[in-house]
Image (cartoon, rainbow over all chains, first blue to last red; front, side, top):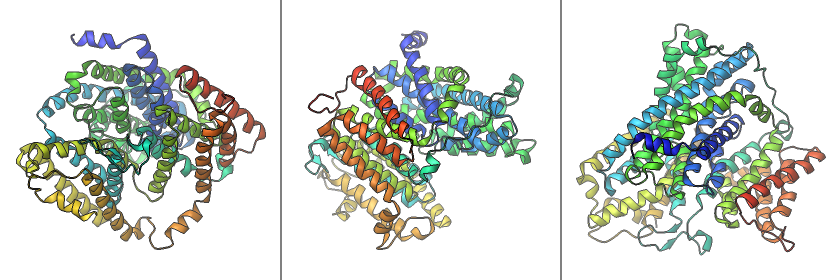
Length: 491
Length: 136
């Protein structure tokens, strides 16, 4: 089949319906403070398990794109970013709302999100296949090198303290070890519990670490505060004009590119991208002193960048099987359940699914624009739901979602345990990303490490004798030294 | 237990394969070492240290501890009384934890929400939730 046949085969009524549903759920999840994009995806994951692969891909990619935009709605209307990546949007977005331009700020954030998403989708389509073709030369030693480098970058980049990043990543690797050995199949870390023979269910880890820990963190607030509806700014007057959108074209293009390339770096994520793009927009601006007082450029830069991350983070995920951020880490798990194993072989073995991902990412920007405009009043009403009602509903969804995956109450108990663990990490300023990405990469890293050793008759020099592997290990050491020195300087 | 793992990482094994427990030990070794180092350098960025840290953590997180304890009881209770019955008790309790004091909402919201959830997951996705003797 040629390109157009493949694309046409993906565009079916049901696929589009699930894409629209994903975008809608994502916008709501992103807009609700306390519900992050990763939590939205983790909560949608159980539902996606009961769908054909193409519907699941559409739902999850749509939700990813929608959630990255959704955060800006609450950032503008209640000065509480729904997602960490919308924090930079609040600087100017909320100020615009205070100046009576909430409608314009939301319009700008919506169109900039679509533009950023579109830029990153185009780059994804061109880069992923090229990277995958290059990585076809990789053997187990090279894969192990890539994963080690990715884990080092994630541990170093996330948060200020590298030690905490390394500890979180190592704990993720440890959690991934529970169950059967990937080479010989003997059980380990099961403690005689039958339900652990297949390891921890991905959903119990994802939902526990993201959703349950957030629910526990929210309990720190006073009950009276949780039972108050948020006060919203008026968003119905002063809409965005086409001229205003066009005036931001270069800003959105540069910010979208920043977002895409930041997204490619493992573990960096949307918040860094939006702050970087915001700083760059301010640096290039003719009126930098006005940033923070309600200029539309700040909103455009931040939103184009955080949606640019979506396509960027999917590039290493599709080409190498290495997730670029936490959301793509969860997606790797979801895709594997559906028989789509991200990595270079994906492009030769599952080309239909690759095109499903491309089309879903491209079309999600169109659906984002349509749904973002049409359903804004409904989303705003949902944002007004009190946390005292929202969080109990989320709690039940956590239990039901975890149970639905394997029909096992042990997974629900494990989810609560991971919730406590995630709460401990958050309370002590550990980042969750290294833990989750190490949990997802752990089994593959171990498999490649041991395969490389088996092939070389257990000679560790194999990692240094292969040029690509040696370069990757050297980069790992260089980045580790860099991050340690940076940590020591900060201390 | 942990140090042999580190030794295995850097020394040529001479043809013998690494143990199935090598990877977990390695992860445990790195986690322990980096956590210890993080604790030793903790004063500046928030990780507590010292003997009283656990008791202090529990006492300052009473609400979270109670919430988790109730949640574990709920999961266990589901085995005996079924999903719907257990959730109809649990959800108002969770709403109470989150500050809802309106009696009407404490009854209406769980009934409507659980009915929707039950319909979607049980009827559409055909997931069989734990049920009690009456099949509820």
